[in-house]
Image (tube, rainbow, N blue to C red):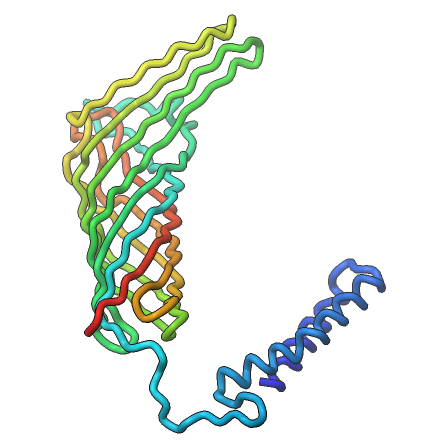
Length: 273
């Protein structure tokens, strides 16, 4: 570990000439690295079981935290949502027009689920997701104060099934992939119109008939879990969601496929084996 710390220090110092720093900044960085180098060495001793003088570790000592092959989790997510929009086939299709200029929006999601360890590095993950997606179009007249905003939001109940590849014990890194069948629960459009005199008019409507009732998304994610104690832990799991089935009904003017980057976080509860 001391050798690792020295190598890391030499690599960083070798990188410094390529950065536009003055001599004073370079000296400050070197001093900070020299101060932190002993901490890296001490951390390496703790990880390897070589603690300070007068302290011995017992061979074959059991882990403080018991193994838990079954986990329950509960959390939320901030989904940076967008879509892939295409013109439908004739005779129903229309040009995208102004819809080609729609932007992504951020929407909150909620989820819960269950993980079961299958082997040392493999888990199966099944749950229940309350997902939302959407997009927004806005126009500002450069010659006046008039403006127009149109926001679409779609809500789904999803049943994700994933396989997780995990590394670590207390601090766990994971790579996950799977699919999520979904049922549409709502579709809402909100409009805000501002005229040249700054008078604002709002309209909203919702209709499930405009949507295909069933959907399916591909899920890909990478996460970090930290086990705080024998019963509970926390996790952060950014997830990419890729719609495989058209969101709209067959005779709509467009084909709509959801996309989302969902930054999920929450609590993990470890159940006794």
